[in-house]
Amino acid sequence: MKDEKIQAFYHSTVREEEARSQLNGRKALSYDELKSSIETGERARYPYIRWGMRASKEDLFKAADDLLKEENPKKLEAYLSIFVKPSFPLDPQKVIELAQSGKKRLRSAAIHALRNLKDERVHRLAVQLICQRETEVEALELFTFNYEENDLPLLERVAFKKNNKHSFHNMELDMVNIFEKRPTASCQKIMIELYHKGLCSLCRRRAIEIMLANHIMPASLRDEIRYDCNPDIRELWMN
Image (tube, rainbow, N blue to C red; front, side, top):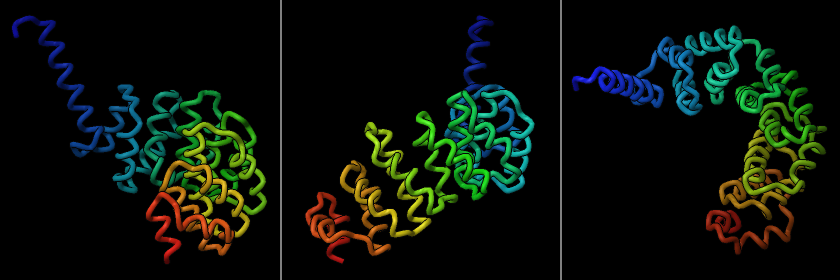
C-alpha cells in the first residue's frame, strides 16, 4: 500500500478494532485504558458494564471519583455504565441528581447505576420517579433494595396499567426482583397479574415461587398451574 491516504485509513481501522477488542473483554483492559476509551467517545454500554463486573475495588473507586468530577453527558453515561452490576462506592448524591436529568439516556444510565444501593435518598428518588409517567417503569429497579410496605399502592398502580410487551416484561422482572428480596404476603395481587399476563416463562415461574414462599397461592391458581405450558411450572405443582 503506497497511497498515504489508504495507509492512514488502514492503520486507523486497525487501532479502532484493537480498541473495540479491548472494550469487549477480549484483552485485559487497565483502568487507564478504559478511561482513554471514555475520553475518545466510545458509547457502547455493554463493554463498560462488563469491565465493571471484573474490576478491582481500587479501580471502581477511581472510576467513581472520575465520574464525580465529570460534566460531559456522554462521558458520564459511560462512567455510569460501569456501576450497573457493582455498587457505586462513593456518595451517590451526584448520581441521584443525574437520575433526574431531562436527558433520557443520561437519566436511564444513572437509574441503572443506583439499582444496587440501599439509601433513603434513593428511596425518595424512587417514589418521585414512579409518580412520573416517563419514568414509572424505570423507577421500579430502585425499589429492589429500598422497598417499604407503604410503597405497595405505587407498585400496584404500575403493575395494573396497560403496558406494551417490552414495558410489561421490564416491569415483571423488576417486580419479582423486589419481592424475592422483600418477602411479603401483600404482593399477592401483583404476582397473580404477572402470572396471568407475563410472556416470560422464567418470570412467571418466579412469581409462582414467590407466592408459594409467602403462602399466598390461591387455590384456583394452584389447580391451574398443574396444566401450565411450562414444564418447570408444572413441576412446582407436583412438588
